[in-house]
Amino acid sequence: MWELHASSGQHFRAEDYTTLKDLKVTFYGEGGHVVTLKANEGAMKKRKDFDVSGDVVITSSEGFRVSTYSLHYDNERRQITTTDPVILEGKGVRVKGVGAVVDVDSKMVTILKDVETFIEG
Image 1: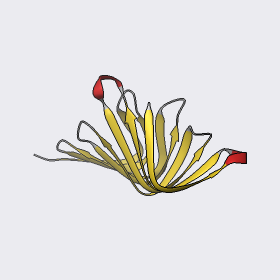
Image 2: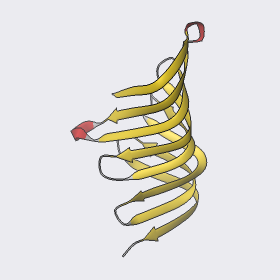
Image 3: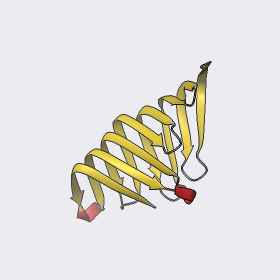
Image 4: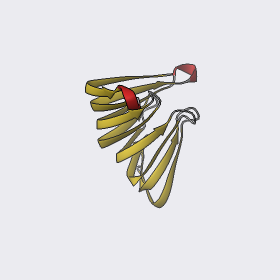
C-alpha cells in the first residue's frame, strides 16, 4: 500500500494522467517498514505507475537515504528504478554510482554501474 501527497496537481481524465508538484509518496511494507519518496515534480499514469524528477530523495524507516535526479515507480513490481547518478547513505556507508533498482518489499537496493563505496570508521 502507498499514499501520495502533493502541493498541487492536475488530472487529465480522458488519459487518466496526473501531473504533480512538490510530492511525497509513502510506501508501507510488512512489519511496519516505511519508505518515503520526495520530489519536486511528477506524473502518474492510471493512478499506479509514476515518474518523478527534481531533488528526488528516498528515505527508509531504517535510516537509509537514496538521492538522485529522477526515477520511475512500477506499481505491479513495487520497484523503483533510475538511470541517473545515485548516492546511497546510511549507517556508516556511502555508495555512489549510476543507475539503481530499489525493491520496496525486500528493501534491496542495487546500484547498477560505476560504483564507489566509502566506509566510515
